[in-house]
Structure formats: C-alpha cells, structure tokens
Image (cartoon, rainbow, N blue to C red; front, top):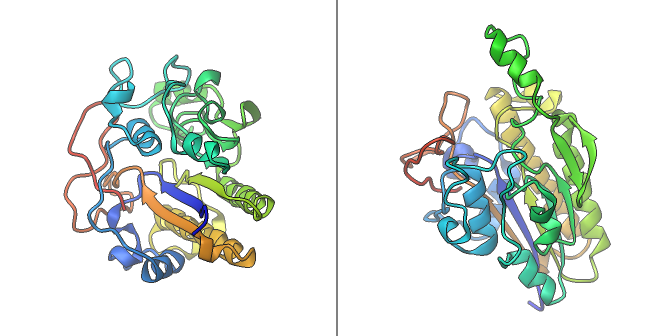
Length: 294
C-alpha cells in the first residue's frame, strides 16, 4: 500500500462480548461480524486503562498514561468539564505524525483529553474536529429529571450544557443525543468524499455505549436488548456506512479500518457483556483491573 488511508473506530464502554463475532446472541452486528470475517481478529489485546481519558490518551500517543500526565487528574480517574488539565501540546499523537507525511486528519466524536482551547484536537495534529469534548453524561442531559432524589435532580439541571464542537467553536448546546450518531456518520462520509484523492486518517470516537443510552427510536423498537442493544446496533450501522462509502469511492483496498473500544463493559445490569473475560470498566473514582478492549 502507498500511504494507506486509516479509519480508527473507537467505542465507549463497549464490552468484549457485545458483538456477534465475540459471542453475543442478543446484539445484531452483521457489519462488524463481516469485517471480522474478512479481516484480522485480535483476541489478545489490551488497553492502557479501564477508564476513558487515560485509555484514549494512550491510544493516541502510544504512551503509558502516567508518562504523559494522565495517571490521575487532581485525584480523579478521568477529566471533568472545565479542568485546566489535558494532553500536553508537546506530546506526539498518531494524527500529528500522519499529518507530517501528508495525511488529512479528522476526529469525529468523543475527545476527552482536555476541553480547554489549548488541549483540543486541533492542537494535537487534527486538521478538524466535530464532536463532544467529554462523556455525554457530563452535561445537563444526563438522567431523568423526575428523580426521586430532588437534590440530585437539581444538581443535574444546574450542570453546564453539553457542547457540540466544530474545531474549537461550540456550535450547539445540548444536541439531541438520539440523532447525534447519525450526524457523526454524515460528517464522516463528507470527510471521506472530500479526501478520496489523498491519504487520510479518520478517528471516529463513538458516543455509544456510554451512559446515558440514547438511540434512535426505530433501533430501540427493534432491539432484543433494550436501549443498550440499540446503541450496539448503532455502532454496527455506522461501520456499514463507512465501509460502503470506502467501496463507493474505490478506497476499500487501500484503507486500514481498525475497530476497538476504550475499555470493557460496565457490567451494571445495563445489557453489556465482557464475554469470557474477567473484570470490567473501572469506576471513575478508584482503580481496578485493566479490561480488555473488543
């Protein structure tokens, strides 16, 4: 391959056992199953952390989290909105290295490596960015406001709005999360079409299957595994869209498509599965065993 295109799909809290190819009988993932059949399936693969921020920073830099200042964040396991912490501009990312050799670079979806201007993706080798700067449960649209716990409900209502960012600008507050993955897919298709004549790196960082679970109504109605299964199907649908577009542009034979997850499933009776693996996604407040990625 002469400078192959690279599409890196990273899911959020997806478990090893959530896909058909890894044993799920309740979630329908035909596109991912086909991708596994036609490609290479890795069954012994480890992420660098059991929670979002350090796992993602390690994926992007190839460094252990502690070596790049992502061991903890003022005692917290992940970055929270408004913290003056993030990925240092001196660190080299996959995007930065590829940009130096002529790649167009884009991230779509969740960043979670710092939400202040100096830490955003466009400061780390990405030509453009479209997505949420942190987890989708960190804004107002988090849980049912009709909680029995009045104080908790009020606390959630007073949170800053969840920002949808393009490059370094907030373009919408509190986006409809049921429609957001479809918007991400449209953005990805435009990027592929716009760079079909030159090498590109697309980092597609899903919102799914992080809580709260928001999937389109038609997927929820067809799911055998509730909202969780609908979100897994949403991940599979996006994969099909991307693979079809690569074929349509004649790029499928010169594109590496990599599918993974930032950590394992939460295993909180919400529909997820880590299959044959032990452990689970780490809670935000304390360390547990590192989970395998799917």
